[in-house]
Image: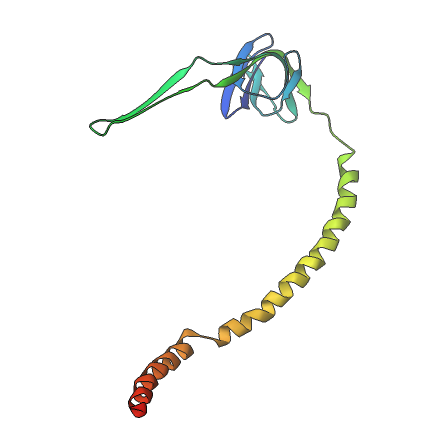
Length: 166
């Protein structure tokens, strides 16, 4: 039996007993993990449905990859930067393929109390939005077309008023 699973943005072909190195996953050595993103499963040339299929794995170790040196240089500008990076990995041992996801029946009960809270929050949000809608027509009354001639008239009137004062 084999499966193709996706974790850490990469895809891996696994079979029971395989050890794979994946991007860092939360957990300690000895913890068990379920990989639920199964893309393909089968045995030999026969393919199996992946609906609800999980791959059980055990964390063997948390490790770091070899150091990668990052060196940047711009010639003739005295610009040199040197940095290192060690990617964190998790080593997994595949225990089994083919378990089904446990359906949680407690979640809908938790969502029902949350729904009235959202319903109470919605009228408050509407009440906050209503004054903003009332303020919008005032902004429309002041248009740049109306304001521009007033400024021009004020500028023209200012020199005339200065001339009258003399």
